[in-house]
Length: 320
Image 1 (tube, rainbow, N blue to C red):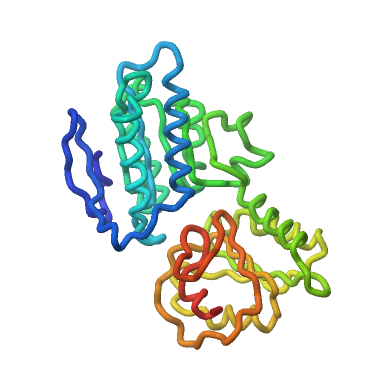
Image 2: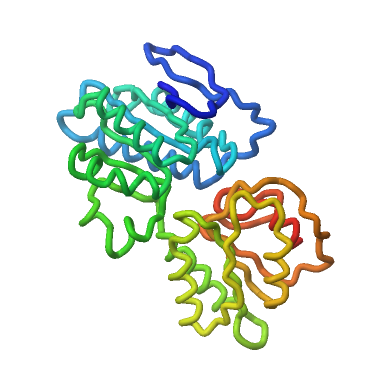
């Protein structure tokens, strides 16, 4: 793997194995936490897609694939992306027997949650590798999908598996008829929030209408799906009592939590919020939790376990 041209580097070491030079992650697993189920799904989907590609006649002389993950940057340090991908590719090339007996030449890049880096890296790989060998790529954010629409779907015509659930790209107005080489892993952001609204409708036991508050980040995915989710909640007859933007860089959530408390929200939906600083807020923890907390993309358990699009501290510490 050739590292990104500039910016913060991941703790990587050069490795040579079976003629392939790449950079291998060297994180301390005791500090990184468990690999998330969704990331395992991402890697497994990637491997399955490669297997399907390998079943096609006239397979390339060499199978080259590129995966880009946000392993550093504004979302924090996410080494589990690299762990899962490296383990998956190593398994395919060893126990899995490769693709139709051929081992995969794989490349792993940290695009640092920067769409400019993601786009530039893909363009570089397209220039360096021939089309009959560079067979598949992955990305992770909507910001990279949009500027690559023509490059991926028209010029290169290379399957692109993405971690984005963009309503525009993968929803009713997009999809395979418009973007034939883009693939996602599940429901769009808007549909994810609608699923949560249906859950509330089916499980609400208290008297009166459900009182729902929305907390989302001022990011592409935080704003994607939130208007549709709010409109759907109102359509179901819910009282939407709060709509709060919560910045990535925030270190205190006192005012946001007070807004939710004053609004008497029974359900709080978090969307597009991840990797917030672990700084404890100035306010104290409440004595009793009075609302149910829901998150798009990934279920929430305990505050210390929050990952991905769900909320970490300080917002959760303040809520209790």
